[in-house]
Image 1 (cartoon, rainbow, N blue to C red):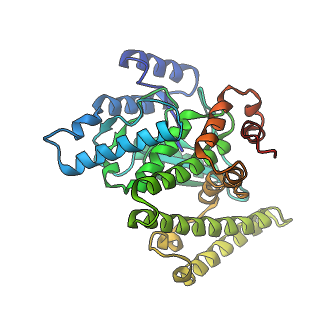
Image 2: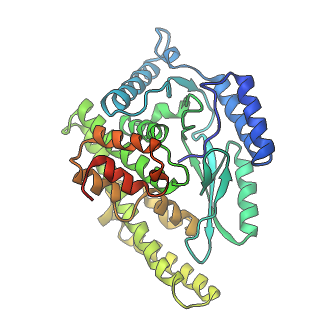
Image 3: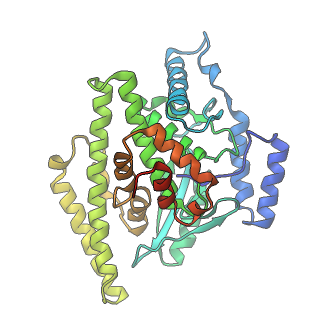
Amino acid sequence: MKPSFPGFCFFPTAAAAILLIAACIFFSGCYTLRQGTSMLGYLGRAVPLEHLAGDSASEENRRFARQVEDIRHFAMKELGLRESRNYTRYVELDRSYLAAVVSASAKDSFTRHEWRFPLVGAMPYKGFFNVEDARKERAKLEKRDLDVWVRGVDAFSTLGWFRDPLYSYMRDYSPGRLADLIIHELTHATVFIKGQVQFNEELAEFVGSEGARLYMESRFGADSEEYRTMIDGEADNRVYVAFIRELAAELELLYRSGADREEKLREKARIIKEAQARFTAEYESRFSSENYRGFAELPVNNAYLELYRLYYAEDNYFSGLYERSGGDLPKFVAATAALNKSRAARRNPRVEMERFLGSGQ
């Protein structure tokens, strides 16, 4: 995920502030300045991860620091993701998320609303460190008669401009979740194709998930409780994504029909309500955990459904390509990294990815 802001790793604070002010003047009013200033504030409080591993640190903090270092080593040395100092610093926060992110869509179609940013181009989401700013953005978009969704996110990649830090709430993550998050974000830092946001997100989602699976298997073993818990969680997630896809497909047929807008909106409400009732009735037969129980209470709209269309390819493209190319994740990562140097990737990154892998597709 994640809107990105210019960074701290390669620039002293004063230079970073100048960049943010320039971006404010030339690109996006004061949005970049406000969010960038908040980011600089977080980064200014960051301490080296080693502080959590010292003799005076708690066992919980030492374990967390060791886990992060092991995941970073695995991601960079064993998977081949870009070498960096990301996730070597730590920020203490008093909340369980990093930023509030706003997404929007038309009410009678899955047409995404997009924002334009310096350096990264058009993006289908906009992040705010202050949740009140996100709520104001939601109100503005709702006045334009759009479906809007606001969600908390726990990390984003600054694409190499900053040294991305860890945050205190991550100490509570399971090893599998922590590995998925770090590998996902390091994938964004390894390859980012401007103008191809869906490709970028689907790729990071796949590499993060498969990389975390390989990490857990190598560190805990395929027969371990830790590994099985992660696999069961992934199975539940696939079931949930499949359900969301089915609902979105049903709505897509409605939106493409000849019905007028008001009829589409009435039918949309009925379809979503019936889907939520069906979800509740079938929950025990579909899921092994309680993690998705709350779907029936969500104010589901197109913006929510479109997020799943953004992050999870309907055709399972990356998993299929991965299998066809031999199921070698380091080879797969090397092919993605090569996309950064390919002009053709900006037009069709899938074709270039297949060419680099030599999959014959």
